[in-house]
Image (cartoon, rainbow, N blue to C red):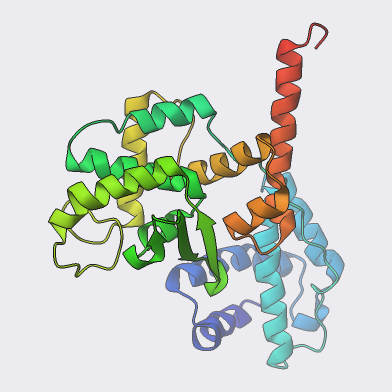
Length: 295
């Protein structure tokens, strides 16, 4: 069976255009699978049974492989068997009836409102970086943008007079998001005091620029939020996505309807947004335990 692995990896390159890193991950996952089949003396694709795949995944579970990693492993196995079927090296696909392990849903990490206040407060100062960072963090928390949407946001896509911005999210879908007064004020300060001096001729389309006057990168903003969290004394593990989670959680906790939050976040499926209702329910249970006389 091992001879088919090289053929499969070449097929991934030519037909699927996958990167070298992705091919390496497939090679590592499938190498363990094919070694297991060799021990079972499965010498041809059609000699492999669904029970062989199920037993292999079971052994991987016993080895401590997490559900999400086992699901990825099964995805690689399925793709291999589809390839064997397409290229007529096999007449059956034993992986077709194997169900993927269901990964446990991890509740998103979010900041309390007090922690958000401390984080935003850590940007107070008169330096250009302070004014820019304050505008970026206020806008991120006010709109729930993804970090890629924030750093790619164009000046023309923001209308501070009516308090809206337009962004292009996943799947190339446009969406309009309202901007609160505080964020509008901070962005206006940044445009007037910092950006107009960095790019007086308006050559850069991006709204937020680096210290060198270039477009902000995701990595640079990640460093900014880590630095500001440290200054604020926020102990929660934080990333740019944490403010997106906080935006959604705080809206729902204060009475926003799920459908409106879905539209603002740009989720294609309402079920994706529903995870925030679990966060809110957990918070309610925590408050009840802490504050109710018989909690």
